[in-house]
Image (cartoon, rainbow, N blue to C red; front, side):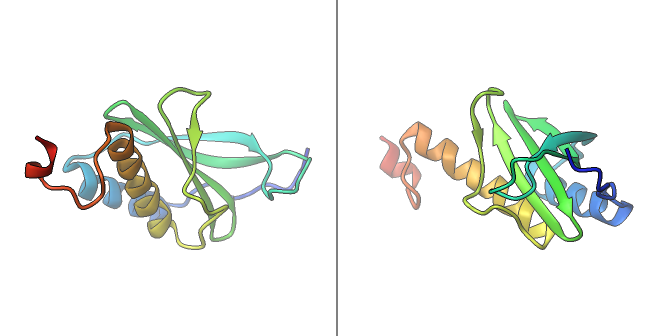
Length: 125
């Protein structure tokens, strides 16, 4: 396990996440901070402790991992054994990371419901 300590999310980063969530849900969302043990790089076999942000809304749980300076990895899940990412290992911009994971989760829900992207109400009869 790596001994390198990644700094916690700072107030500006927390504010960025809160702003994106408030825009998405139209209300303040409670965010919990945690530390998680993960492989920082895809090829790593060693685990490292990373700061993480967690929230749950509308039956979906989200985690944003801070992998280092300006490196974030998003995940969402419905059950702990069903984790989904965005197709990118990490993002250099936290706002983009949060926005993308929210959009990917929305797209995933549409796919699960059988709703094609671009569908309108009249397509759902």
